[in-house]
Image (tube, rainbow, N blue to C red; front, top):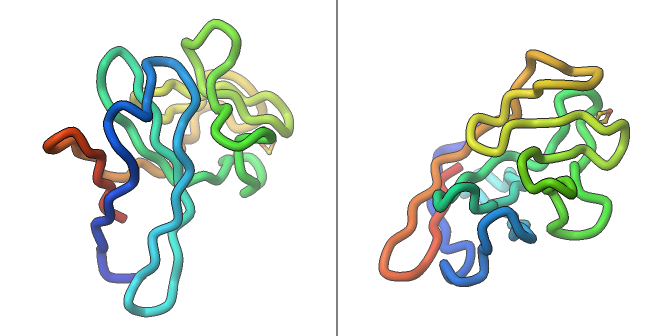
Length: 116
Ligand code: FES
């Protein structure tokens, strides 16, 4: 496992509540990469690895579009698994009960940082 790295992902204003997320790649000193995304839900920032728990594909078919139409769940574009935006728990779909890999996210001085 790669040593943790913290990176600036985006400005806070880039993440609208329930809106388009920001994709990112964190490069580790070991050469490994963590591909993830950050979203805002009910005012708070959350970040996850961008890999469905059913098949490890990226959730978004269109870059950054993780929320479903009702803005209450993250939706995998492949087979429609629904994930809770705050915990990453799959609540419906082929991987129900599994969770996205949560990454530590922090808002500081108007910017969003993620540690992976
Ligand atoms: S790959 Fe995500 S639900 Fe099947």
